Each structure stands twice: as structure tokens, then as C-alpha cells.
Length: 321
Image (cartoon, rainbow, N blue to C red):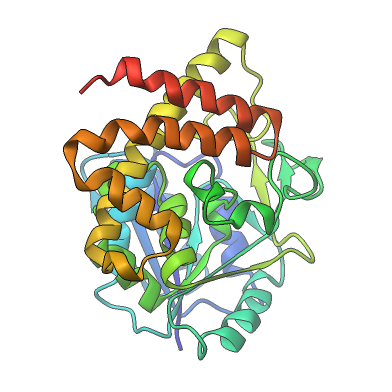
């Protein structure tokens, strides 16, 4: 078993040194570093290479791309490249360009991985985090204390259609899991890479978690793509909810097509049989709007999640095709 680090970056010079340094300083060491840079022009690659050289590390590979397709597509591209070189029982840690790992993270995650990998090769593990501001001052001691997210509640297969409680940089996945999602998913319609992994591995693998002690600092700053503390106006919040509803519908459609390729309908769980049935014929596709709306209203654990039902149903009028 080898330990790999997958890190994607794009113009991350402001915080990238903190992130990489926190990984290098772990007591259990990474065997191979895989850095994917997507069109950075602020010195991000030079900062990372300088750090590796300063610590005498030679076990890294740098991938440079001329385009910046966004977080999700960047990670999916990295998945595809990395799946070619990892073994099924290797463990792959994910890293963002702005968060900080706390001491002992690798060891704690590795212990769970080693206990679980023999039972299910398609394995993913994630952990709790402390939410901090841009200067690493504590905002919330544990991301999963109370709403909007709670574990294991929000890992239920139906709720995962509507929201993803997992933070990407907390993930550790097996080589087998990485290969599966790289080879068997059409990545174009998925909102985020971590969300896609949860949808897939909750059905065709195992998802475990470590929440006893937060193992990283989840930094909130002005450039977060997603964040937990952003203050938004009412108009912005409504627009964001509407955009999310549309994205959820498209993601569910993509996921349903992937499900049809993965297994025979007779072997599918009941929820997946419904999804496959809806998208089996073109004239049934309109059913996805009321189906997801009802799911959000009756299974949404918070008021905000239940209100998502109205935005999902409203997509009927925005996507008449």
C-alpha cells in the first residue's frame, strides 16, 4: 500500500504554502505527490516546487495544463491521470490549495483505511474539520456539529441526491475507487467531484468517516468556490438556490444514465429503479422535477433544504425541453 497525495491548484499562491507545508510536516509521510496545476499565473507552481526542494523531496510529479476548467473538472481530469498509476489498495489523499492539515491526520486516516480495505476495495473515508477564517482563527470548532450538515444523517442515499455533506480535501479514497469513478462515470454533468464520489461509492463501495477529532482547518476566504460562512443578500441567495436546483436536476439525469450502464435494473435498489425508469424513455423525463421536489420537501432535514423543493419544481418552466 502506497500513500499518494492529489492536489489541484489554480492561482493559489496566497495560501498554497500553508497547505503543502502542513502535509510535509505530518508524522506519517506521503509516498508520492501528484500536483495538477491549471493555468496558474501567480507563481503557484514555483512556490510548490521550492517547498519540495527545500525539504529534499523528489517523490513528486507536476502536471501543468494551459486551461482552467473549474474545480470539479480539474479534479476529474486529475482522477483520470492518477488512476493509470495507482494500485487498487493504494490510498489517495485529496488536498485543496487553501486548507491546512492538522498533525496526525495521515496516521488517523491510514489506520481506518488499513482496517477497512480488505473488506471493500472501493473505499472512501472523510473526516471532520474546524472552520476558520483566512487568518486561521476559529469560526466553528466542528463543521458537523448541528445543522446544516450532520453525519451519518446526510449520507443516506436519497438525501445525497440533494446535497453533499463531504468536504473534498477531507477525502481519502482507494486506488480501486478512483479507477471505478474514472472509468464508469460521465463526469460532465456532476456538480462537484466529491459529490460524485459520494453518489457512486455509497452504492458501489463503502464510505466511512472519522469525526472524533477534526483533522484539518477548513479556511473561509473571499475566493472560496463553496463556503460555509459567506453572507449573501436575499437576491443572491434566491439566485443561488435556483442555480443549485437546476444543477441538481442535471446531475441527477447524468447519474441516472451512469446507473443504467453500471447494473441491470432488476438488481438496482428501489430508488435507483425509479431514476432509471424516469430516464429510460424521453417522454418520462419531466417526472424528475416533481420526484426531486417531493424528495426535497419530505426528506430535507432543514427548512432551507425543504424550500429547495420549490426551486426544483420551478425548473420545469425553465427547461421545457
